[in-house]
Each structure stands twice: as C-alpha cells, then as structure tokens.
Image 1 (cartoon, rainbow, N blue to C red):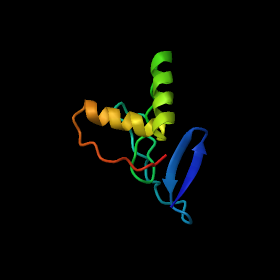
Image 2: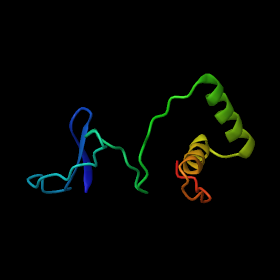
Image 3: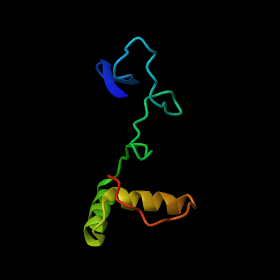
Image 4: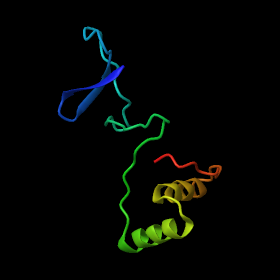
Length: 91
C-alpha cells in the first residue's frame, strides 16, 4: 500500500497499482477527525503548556537525558494509574 494525497490535507491509504479499488480509510478520532498514528501504533496528540510547565519539562528532559515526549508519556501513565514501563524512545 502507499499513501496518496487526493486533496490537500486529505490522505488515504490506497493500493499501489489498481486505483479502481476503494481506498482504506485512515483511523478517525472520537469526534470524527483524522487521527495520526505512527507505524508502532502511537497516536499524535497536541499539548498546550504554560511557560513555567514548558521550562520545567525542558529542564527535566535535559537533566535526565530523555525526550520531553518520554517524560510526558510517563507522567500521563502515572496520573491515570497505568503501568509505568521503561519507555523506549519512539520519537
């Protein structure tokens, strides 16, 4: 399969050779919007932080030699009571 751009901002997964088949649709979010997923199955989310939070996150990432994304994933898992596994860098 390959990714095609039918219209600007619209991507569908379609067959590589036979364009007559119906293209598979990309996953949709809970409100029906498009959801970006990585090959490993991770979902892209946007996050707005205040200046103090952003600075603290940046500092923690630097001091622990981890990505900001790793720290956020760990914090979310702790907050929600999910198992906190050693996060492998997937960014």
